[in-house]
Image (cartoon, rainbow, N blue to C red; front, side, top):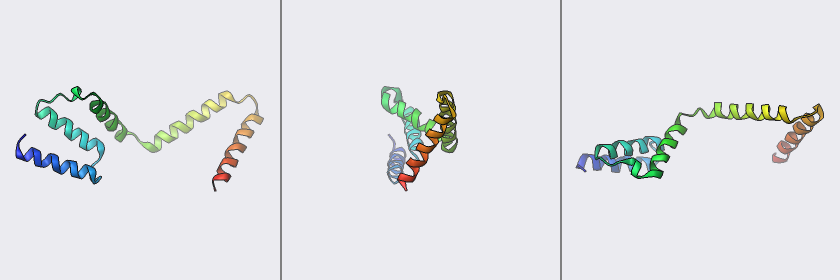
Length: 102
């Protein structure tokens, strides 16, 4: 590895540890550097999987994810409820849970 690449690797490592760059940014940088030096990242199975995972995670809209989860939960509950009383009971349990956490 040439001196410039080594210095950049050290710099990126420090920035990552200090949380100045994202995990996906750091791992993408590592993958590009590995490719440059003919290192097959797929030989590092878990790192390759993690790099894909973290890159996908960064593209998620967390707010929309939680909205989708809530919609799915509501759809499932609507299928499970057999009566309006069961629905009311669930809503009451949720309110009690919230009150206990205050």
